Length: 424
Image (cartoon, rainbow, N blue to C red):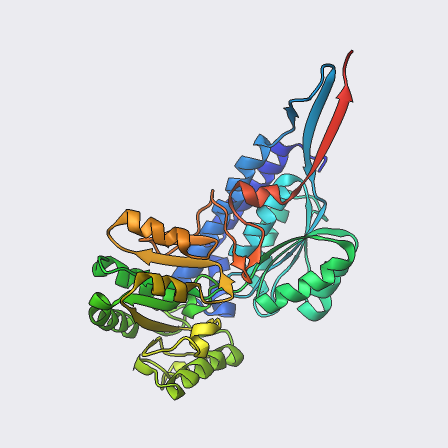
């Protein structure tokens, strides 16, 4: 905190520059430990560096401000001071990206950080952290502690030293963190589970919506909190959309992430794969139709990884698991609708509220739908709700608090009001 903001910013920029220079090494490590295609690993690291640079630019602009007062001779000064020790807990699916969202604003604000990576994918994130050490970040400012959540994570949350807990994880993990943090009334920022809907209105351009929907449903094998799990298509377009979407899904090239041209890697482990198996099995029992996929692929190299075919379901019902729970796998369920109000109600019929998407040519109608969707971020004719300068976070059981944008920095400050007499 005693280091001037412009000096902190310079170290952060230098660390990001080192990470860009080492991107191939880190991307290879990330692919080997997590499974995502190498091209996607490179993109994750590149965006993470952009996040660091964004906060390096933003933090020096933050300062105190004078506020108007009720009487002569009195002045009010509002200061923003670093919150203190920040605990950053990140998941295995985007271990570098989501780490940067947490350490970037915290370090820029002048906080110290204890980062706890996932035990499943700790190596690439460790390489990313090393870039800032090598760039001159003082010892003890950014700490990296590997261990299981039930031991190391719980202790970090419980500790009276930590002041802000920022976590990306499951909703159940969020509940546990809230209970542990309650003893010392910690400040929390929770980015939790999601079950994102995508609405295809009757005037949507299928040539644009289909590839966008395929990408958002199956990117990182569906292991992303803003993945599209449920697709609601206007009846007039349902047959054409379903055929094109299923064709796009079936064309995705599965394989080892280091192979050229691979678009879909394996799931993290067998437990993660079994969640997809369970949701598809439950849907089949309830009468759903598997249009494509629905099983683990045969042959090499699929026997040496936790692969699952990109799966498309139709004839689904609201009570099915795939419509109520986060799959976190390459499974998308398509429903038809004739009444837009009903489709919006079904899209909102979930405990989650992280992201949602709507596609259509009439932007005024799309915006009207977007305003009614219960989600912290809505994409209109785009398949991503992430923007450096805009807040990212959820409603309902998808958590609270915001990352990215100025809001991501605000959470790292405490406000202090100094009221003083300066004259009669």
